[in-house]
Image (cartoon, rainbow, N blue to C red):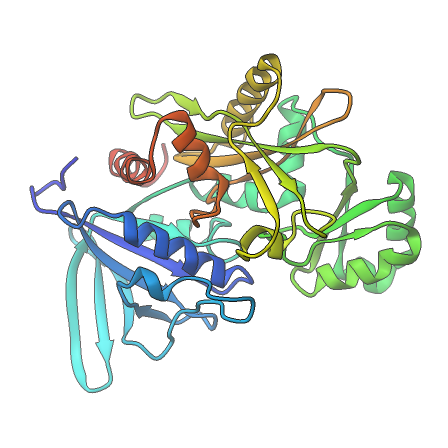
Length: 374
């Protein structure tokens, strides 16, 4: 895999962002930066600060890692600012510092947008990159937006005939003007119910309403992160299983062996601490201990969900394996975590594709695919 001119592939790794998943994006970027072969890639690390400023970040994987519960990484907004500008041959990176004139780093061949959550994983940066005419890793604008919005994702999956849990949505406007109607819809779903920011991730802002008395507090907590809240039936007694999906270079779709998340500590569900803090007691079984026929069905449903939403590049599809043995699609993640604890790279490693090879394949797919309508 070579750049068009025979030089090293100039890769912009973009991370951080304005969402509540800023720190996790930084951790993901650290893992990718560490895995990249510098003889093949000319790497430009670009951080997006929480206030939206783009800066030329440090190419230092160790700086972008979690060192404790209160020591989460963040983009350094005081570094030199960068802009992505359209050129005659694609898009270039321009660095600006107060004490010196702007300098160009040259054209970018491909962007790896390691952004989680709104303003990154939701189609916004994908649209910007399309406008700039630069190739990028992962799903396009529509698939990113649909997968980010859990309510619309369910609509698409249901239309494709895929199984999902019953749900309803509550907007900030409705909660302010007619909360009784929202409470009534949730009562029809039944309790316990999970209350989530509709366009969030990393389990931030998610809580479980065991009874109607807890619903208001849960909705208020979710509204702190998103003016649109999704409320769905709790999959009581279900097992959480996942499957990785990856495009093949010949246009097909490949899937991983399934994996299972087991919460062995004091957490009632797979919350932020259980996912990312190293001292938490979470067990990841790769591959999952499920019957062969369940694994086969799960991989088939994961591929179907990937295609139904129109994903490209990669996705992690999360399922509930219900007590009766049936499978329910929980959600799709178009830019799943690449942290050392993340399931997506672990599942691919167990399927025969190690971390550096996984990163290489994603970049190769992006270089193979142009921008614009396709």
